[in-house]
Image (cartoon, rainbow, N blue to C red; front, side):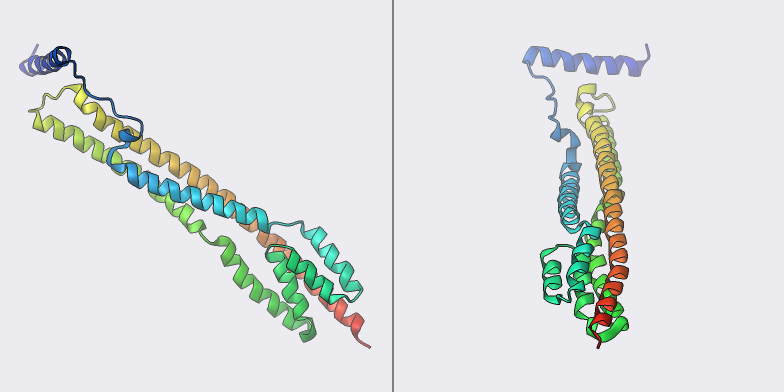
Length: 234
C-alpha cells in the first residue's frame, strides 16, 4: 500500500474510532437541509411557480365558456330586437368572448366598420391579460436548472474545501453533506424546470383556445349585429 493510501486509511480509522468512543457520529442532514445553500432560492422559484399555475388555471377555467351556446342565446334575443337583454346576457357571462360581443353590440349604430374597430380594441386588451404571468413560468423553466447547477458547484466546492482543510485526508462522512447538496440541488432544479415548462405549455394551449373562441365569436358578432341593424332599418 502506498504512503497516501496508508494515511487515508489511518484518517478514516481515526474518525471511526472517535465515533465509537465518543458516541458521536456525523449527523445525517434532513431532506431540506440536503439542498444546502440553494434551499431558499429553489423554494422561492418553486413557490412562485405554484402561485402562477394556480392563478392562471383558475382564470382560464373561469374565462372559458361554451361559445356556441352563448352566441345562440344572444342571437335569439337580437332577433327580437331586445338589445337590453342581449347586453344583460353578456354582463352575466364571464370571459373575453362575452366582453367582445358586448362591445360589438354597443357599437352597432356606427356600422360594420365601427363594430370591427370595437372588436379589435377589446382584443388588444384581452389577449395581453390572458398572457399575463406566463413569462414567469417560462423564466422559471429556464433558470431552475441553472440554480440546480449552481448548487452542484457549491457542493463540490465544499468537498474540496474540506479536503484542503484536512490535508487531503477528510473522512468520507464529512464529505457526504456536500455531495448531498450537489445531487439534491441538481435534481430539484431539473424537477422544477420540468413542472414549470409543462405548465407553461399547457397554459399557452388554453390561451390559444380562448383566442380561437374570440376569433370565431368576433366573426359571428359582426354578422349578428349587422343583421340586427338591417332589420331595424325602415
